[in-house]
Image (cartoon, rainbow over all chains, first blue to last red):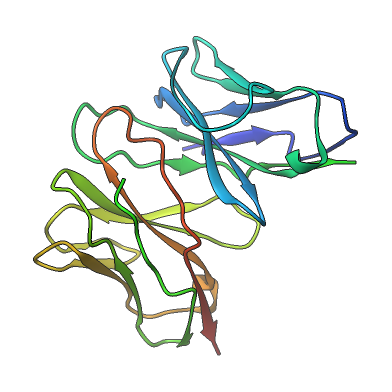
Length: 115
Length: 112
């Protein structure tokens, strides 16, 4: 069973550019969440999508956006990159349960360096 | 979400049991306790979760106190590959439960 796939694994951008990261969830998983991890702030929730709709959003500026496609694949975009956006961006997918615990399966992440 | 408190670091001898504590004194009745771990520069890995009862799977055991205010993750026979940061998280179940709040976790070092 394939896991969560994130591409690209590594990328370098310069300030002011934009970047798009991709996430392919586990087959059958319809929820996709995105997290940012930095040494200073740790793991922080960005947003979560289900059935092409954003259901939850963390406390990040509007430069951070995302979307989900009908096949549950998701992308996130960061515009007007700043040095502080350098981070490991993690995607997680999950089965949707109406009750009971929800377990997230994380991908290996996309490491973004902004110069 | 209930706040969790974990020791910043712990050491464990290889082959011995690793017992990682977590305090969540403000936990609500409908909040689960989750444990994830993150090996350096990889994505977090789910370990186990529980609501009230103790739980065991192929990776670990989770012991939750009767008042649910604290829990302990037990790795029965720690190996060097268990060296990682372990996160204890509490979160409600159901829709909207994907917004996990990760604290600083416990950095477990397994010593040969």
